[in-house]
Length: 206
Length: 206
DNA sequence: TAGAAACGATACCCAAGGTATCGTTAATCC
DNA sequence: GGATTAACGATACCTTGGGTATCGTTTCTA
Image (cartoon, rainbow over all chains, first blue to last red; front, side):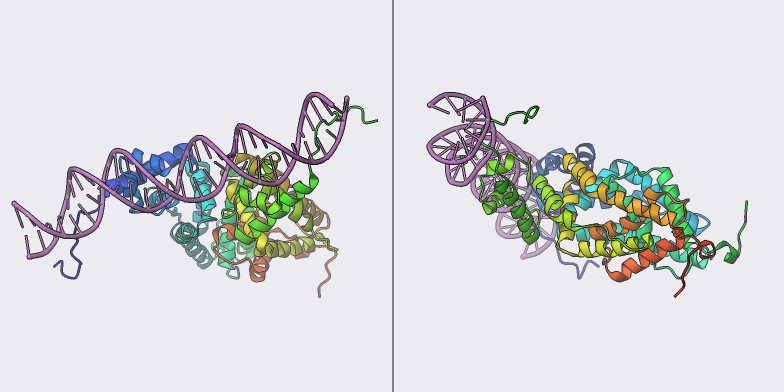
């Protein structure tokens, strides 16, 4: 029964147009960069009128944000390893790789733009960062349960210490986000967060 | 003898105008935010013509960058404690305080704008970040010499781990940059970077 | 004094963001 | 099937701020 749902008068919105806009936005921003593209370009590339775009999104940033969430987001899954701590290590590597890809610049752009746009900042934080951050914190908890990580650490701060340096380098350009860096970061992180070896229970030494 | 210096023809540039522009820029950006102010506003507020501003700087961001460097920069000195490690701890607190001040938003703005402006990014990194970063690394080295920090750490990565989380929170808004956070960060950092207590030489326990 | 560079004030041009409008299309309702 | 509604692409239009050009005046050197 369709009952409680309000009958929809008028022409329905075209999902084709919607998807075309998102695709166009992602393609253009990846190729030319955020500042270089215009709303006109996105609309033209998508084969839609500008008003069609504005009926759905308030501005360029919002379109690009949704393109990231809907087209890129599903491809970034948290890896699953036998051991939680290994998942963290692997995920750091994937994050570094992601930042080195064309999406690194996209993240930079959106994060930058969000400093001037409160709505965008909220969307970025709540819909991109927090879900991923929540995942990290879950895995950290598991690592603690598995006896690999100390239980007296603050998980929010721990997450900041793991990912902060990557964002720092992404935005400030003080160093490359390569495997060597990830190794150093992980090793130095472990030194302070791992349960000391004399206390670990099921330690299999190679 | 004035010798090798090229004789300066024409009217000399007014240092008063120069300073007035920097002061106006800092005042306006602090009060209204980077995006909200215009070049016209800065010039009018400084009592100069727009061309006067453009003769010295290519755009608004460059003016504000120089205002930060010349008017704010001198007030941010690295603290000096008896023990290098204490200096680090103290500096983290000062950095947090700085980010919580009106200059936190200024740093965010410039860092954001620099994602779209290569020249600005270079200026920010080389003239704001690197000098400060270099200072941190010097103090870390001293702490190693004083036997407080391990010598097998990567200093660049260490610096990223100390300051990355602050920038992360500043830009992403995932948490407040308060004393509790600094305490957690410092403690967790120490756990992995401090020379183990059985190896420390001049340890005075309270 | 002539020439040069800088000055404040002002005019001007351009591009992109964003809004308005038009004829057509795709839906529901009677 | 007709009336009404909302969406559609195409187009026109307005505003704003960045940035450039120009003018008469000022401040310097040669």
